[in-house]
Length: 502
Image (cartoon, rainbow, N blue to C red; front, side, top):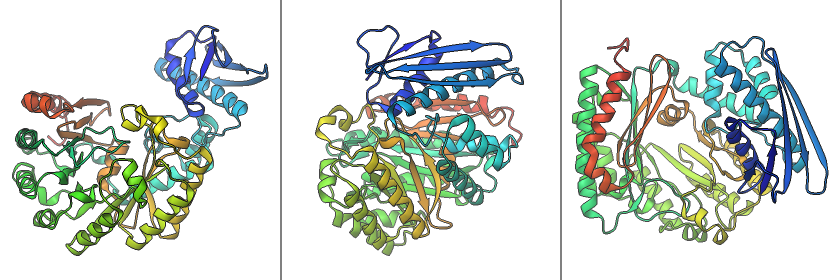
């Protein structure tokens, strides 16, 4: 879809306009000259010191004309950055309004296109706004529907119930440990993940670098007296490595990290059932780790084959019961709405199969066409459900979760997500993942260790976020892990230099 945008010369408006366009159309291209476009949108921005008035006019291919207009009072805003943000939001507001009128498609998330809507809710709470004021702002300023506002409120309240000191954990950190190997690569995946077969040499070299990082970061944390809130082993699939390698890795954690026995939560992704063995579960028990993920994604065998997951539905169920029998007391399972070839009936079947297992938590993802995934590169091969079916599947998931006493506790959104929906984690009472809350709400630094691991450093005083990523491929990681460890410690030194806990 090619759209002619007229009257917007400031390039800072181009990204929000593109993001709003992508909510309605696939593969949007913005043009700022009237050549071969599907339709034209003209903006008139009248900016005075006290207010801004933005008028938008859309001329469709059939010469139909749609208009939208909004005035925003700017009298009370002294900060120039905040002033521009309000103007940008007003541009998004009128553009979303006019596209909703033109297409008949209502966007329940309004002008919010970011990944973390609940983070904004937390921010407004911390600023002292009441629930009523937050709801009014989301509805009137962001055009978010009551259903989504209510979902955000439920999640924020649940998070504060699970972590009452959420807003005061800035002087602690969480650790993400990335292990970039899987049995095979799933078609929708863009994580740094490599098929482990034939890569034993890479695995050994990688683990040497990983142990080094854990020792150095752990030493720094001990010297500075900084506590660890949570540890999360992700990837890839961390249970792709051998039981012996897992044992040595967790032993390194115990020796290197401070006060391990008081870490609030340690999670190990065991998402691929074909990597789970009794020997590996014995290792988890040895280190008192009982929170794992076993991810079916779907209980339709044809779907698993289509997306490149080389395990059977029966194997998922068998490994779930094995893990349960061997003491895993907090099991998460992921489901995906909108997988290729699946409609409402198939997803309802997956929900019915989930009822037979009743894991402690279920995360419902909506399929996203991620830019670098095999599925996106070959879209023609993968037939997915339409927007109405996707919405119905999500509605069925919400109803099912409520009926079976699962409550939503974290949420995030992605670009190119089907139906402009969301991914929601649900949990039975007391079984919520603390790490998932910490990573989504960005209330503390997350130190990424391992291949492809991304660190997110959050200034304890000012909240400024600094991103830092390790290389995604094992060879580059193996060649440079010392350098990347030193860089992280340098950032940490700067970040926590004036921390009141030090």
